[in-house]
Image (cartoon, rainbow over all chains, first blue to last red; front, side):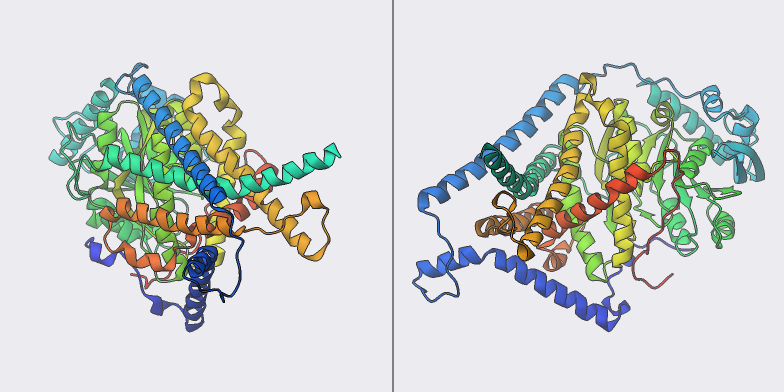
Length: 188
Length: 425
């Protein structure tokens, strides 16, 4: 029997991979960092220039200040606009639909609904719900063709409508909770 | 002459779109993530281990479809069975496994009294497995997890809470946390799930509809499932399909970052490629099947996610085209209108680098509360958002023909990519 233990969840054991793989991963990460740092080159150059490092490796095209300013303002405006659109839409939906249930609550599923949809008999549904170990045979389209109960649920004959009187304590609790849950959920 | 001008402006507009779409989407996700956090996560201040008491505790059926999971199923059942929730059952569906999964599950019944096992005589695929689980389930609320996923002890309470409080909630998607972190690919996915997927999910909740629940940990209301015809056996990703069908039928799909589920992910390039290609194909399939039906005014809440998803498919193709034109320009003299001088303008690069950094900072501050020590993985992936878009581009371009050429009605089959590196328990 396994006891769930959160401290065992994370598997971070680089030793499980081969040496080659470890080297490749390290290299790829280093290269990726280099590429990422490279993205910053224009800025680094600019800063270097500002401090008078004229012999920098390369010269970047420095747009004039008004262009930089204008581009920055445009980006910020676009981001701001996106935010406004997103939040307005969210607020609209919250006001329009929040807190009110416009559609009637879906009625609880009945055994008839389910058997009709799956094309099975009530007996089959009872077997499916009442088995602790089952074998199901399917047709070509995945439809249920037969159900064999290898082992019924302890203390239950037909879980959907088991009389609460003769069910075992555990099963009785499950049954009432199940039926109650369906009613409550569908009715709220 | 006017043709040339037309072409020229086309190519510069193309470049603008290709460069700025991912950039501005990153900011949109950050804004959405922060807003979601301030609106829904921060005010409550409840830790993962401290869910509030519910008005009622509906009976929950935890469904675990399994195909050849002999290495994982013991752990999965043990964790599912350890839910801190008063009333639930665990239903494992053994979908005609060819290994010892079936025998193991039957053995486990002796140890775990809430466990029920359904054996399929022959393999039917995950969607049919889930359908059988729903059919056998005695609960109105179903929590569906994968055969190798470990459900955190309070996850069921966090998920059930949405169904109790919101009668229009059709599904709740949890927060998958990656266990396999030994390799670079594993570490990158840790970052991807927290910094990109987490932010995207939150943003999508803000615009009302989500692109997909995570199939690995999803709660579903049975009555909602019934209305939409359960899981579709011929869609390659049953979770994306389920999300679109539910929301098309006006059901709410929520995200619950505190419903943790610990998952294994591929740690080889081949495994990752297979998985991502399948995800991309699933996305294209729903677009084809439900896209036009969502254009009606009364389905307008889907427009946000529809627009985002359609744009990302268009972007992938335009980006591929841009790279192709640029590469062609390296070896051939290109006519001016089609010439792509550089695929990374200098100042745009600075902006991109800065955006990656900011995105990780935002996600770390939001997501860090669900798992400590995430910061150390950031060394491996500050550049990852760029890779994310490139992977997105490649898989989408490859997935479109696959989705278009697939014959409708072809049953989806189990795909089990590798599950990362670990010493099997």
